[in-house]
Length: 557
Image (cartoon, rainbow, N blue to C red; front, top):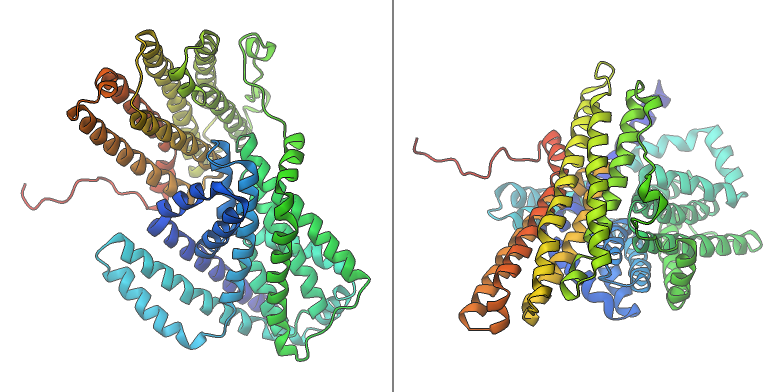
C-alpha cells in the first residue's frame, strides 16, 4: 500500500510538472505567437543568427520540440532552408537546456508571490495579452510547486534496498542508464521535465551521479526522437531537420558515452551538489552539440537529402496514378478501430494529393504550364474518387462497437475528406482559371501586390501541413494554433485588400488592371485555408475551448 501511495505521489508531481510547462509554453504562443514565428522566418539570413534565434525562442516556449515543429513547417514551404532549420534547432537545444537550469534555481519562497500576481493578471486582466502573461507566471509557480512535491514524494525511495542496489548497478552500466533516459523522456514527451526529474532524484541521493549522467545523455537522444516522430508527416524538407538533429544528438551522445566508459567521472564534493552538476552537464552537452555540429549543418543537409530523397510529383502518366493504391482495406471493415486507422491513412493520402495540387499554383500565375495545369486537373479527378471512396468506406464501419470518441472520429474523417474535395474544387475552378486569365491577357501584378499573394500562399501551405498534423495527432495545441492562424489569414486578407484599394486610389496601373484577379485570388486562398482549419473545430469543441458564437450578448430582445 505504501509503494502504491508513493507511486501515485510521484506520478502526480510529474503530471503537474508536465502540465505547468505546457501552461508556460501556450501562454507565450498565445501572447507572442505571431512575433515568434516572424522572428523564426527572419533568422534565415545565417547559421549563427538562426542558432541564437533558436535559443531565444526555446527559452520562451520552454521546448526545443516546439521550435522543431516551427522549423519543419517553414522548411517545408521554403521559408527557410534545411541548413538554417538545423542551425535553428541546434540553438533551440541549448535554449531548452538553459530552461531546465533556470527552473532548478531555489526560489521556492517566491511561489506565493508568483501565484498571487499570476492569478490577478489571469482572472482580472482586461486584454488577452495580460491574461496570457498571468498564465505564464502561474505556470512557472506550478512548475516550482511540482518540483517541490516531486522532492518530497521521492524522499522515501532512499530507504528502498532494491532501488539502491539497482542504482548502484546502473552507476557501472552507462549504456543501460542511457537507454532508460531515452525511454523516460519519450514517455514524458518533454526533455525539460525528464532532466528536472533526474536532477531531483540526484539531489535526493536516490540516483548516483554516474547513472544520472547516463540518464541525461539518454534524455537528449529522446528529445531528438520526440521531435522526429512529431514531424514525420511533414513534407520531405520538413522531415530532414529533426532527422539531422536526431543524428547529431545520437552521434555526440554516443561519443561522450564511450569517453566516459574509459575515463572516470569526477564525483561532486557534496551529494547536495549532484543535481547542480547534472544540470551543468546537460547545458554543457548541448553547448558542445552546437559548437561541433553547427559547422556541419550543410554536410548534414546533404546526408539527410540522401536519406530522405525528394518525393516525385504525381503524374497522369504514372502507373500509380492510373491505378492508385488505396489505404482502405475492406478486409478489416468489421474491426472498427483498424478500419478507422485505415480511413485516416487514406485521408492523409488524399491530403498529399492536395499538397501536390496547391504547392505549384503561384508558379502558374507567373507562366502558363499546360502540362502542370493538366496534371492538376487530372489530380482533381483522383481527389473526387478518393473522397467518394472514403465516405462510402467510413459509412460502412459499424457503430455498435465504437466509443463516443470513435464516433466523433468517424464524422471528423468524413468532414476532412469533404473539405479536401472542396479545396480541390477551389484550386481547379478558381485559382487555375485566374492564373490562366492573367497570363492570357498579359497582365502583371504590382510588386507589392504580388508579394502579398506569395506571402499568403506560403502561410496557407504552412497551415495546410499543420491541419494534416492536427488530424493525425488530435492535438489540442495544434488545433488552437490552426484557429489562430485562420484568424491571422483573415487579417492578412483584410490588410491586403486595404493596401490594394490604396493602390487603386493612387492610380497604380498594374493594380487597376489586375484588381479582380488579385481580389479573387486572395478570396480563394482564404477559402481554402478555412477548409483546412475546419479540422480543429471538433477537437476544440470536445475540450470546451470553442465559443458557440462570435456574437456579443445583446441586452435588447
